[in-house]
Length: 86
Image 1 (spheres, rainbow, N blue to C red):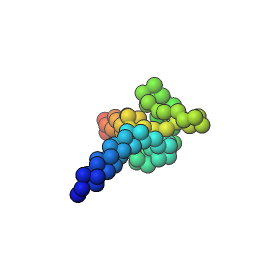
Image 2 (image 1 turned 120 degrees about the vertical axis):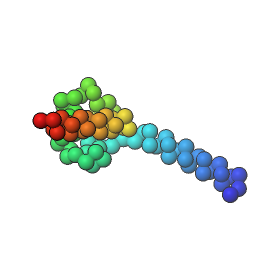
Image 3 (image 1 turned 120 degrees about the horizontal axis):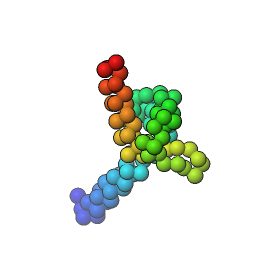
Image 4 (image 1 turned 90 degrees about the vertical axis):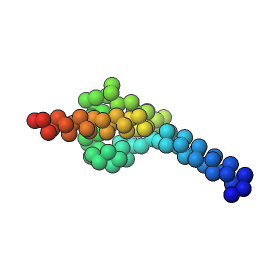
């Protein structure tokens, strides 16, 4: 690899990392990501709105970034644990 190719590879990796941090998924896409239905995600958003850090787009839609997806997965784990206890 030449110096120029190395630099391009580094830039590509940096951009990929930035894109992963800036990911924004719709309710449907987030539901698919955590293996739940969109209705479940909407219920969680209604019931736990202060605990799910959604990003509101210019169009008024809610989008889920990486921290919001992590929070959804944590809620899912809590729910499953609670279901096992009951």
